[in-house]
Length: 287
Image (cartoon, rainbow, N blue to C red; front, side):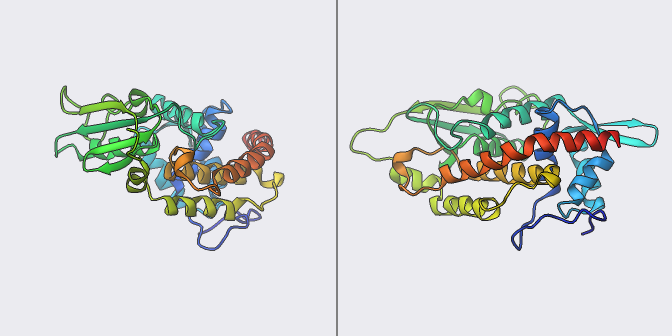
């Protein structure tokens, strides 16, 4: 995959591959939602992803797909096409930032457990996929057929915001098509939830995801000369880790659980790169 002259990809472990959509969402959450930047020319987005090894054609295709899914709003001025956020993507990215910068993004909020069961018609597979994806992002694991569980007190209405009304692929749902049941539960003394935790979440796989993030970033010194490139990759990898590893109670984890090290790594690098990245983007927009 090609990169702009003079902008070689940063040093990465072998085999690192990030999807263009993943990088674009990270960039937009960091620079457009947090930074308040309006629509950006496609050329700027292509250049940033090019520095991360994504070819121009792949970035253009990703932008088109995201516009078709109403995640981006294209704006044409003459021969220049820019892309801005839609109300839906702005809402989703703002909510995601709440967890990205949570004081402890891997610790549950509140006590006990939240359980959810849902049912949709077979013909609405788009909705089923979206509900599952949003439950997973909110920290739910599949306990057994049709029953999802998350530690703590999860705001289910917020977790599933937009599913009913925001236009999935086959159009909004009719009344009664999505049936949801949500309730709180507490562990009964003498009946440990440890087995449920192991059933719903693959803890060793989650440990491996933490270690993968640290392998990429823990020993990396901030490169302010390539801050825009690196903060995009950093936030993309952090969001990927947050999707893969939910909030789990410390009592069900080993003492050497790596979450605190991952949080420290992210905060150190983000603090060093965020300001220079904003400045870099401002320079590119005025060049």
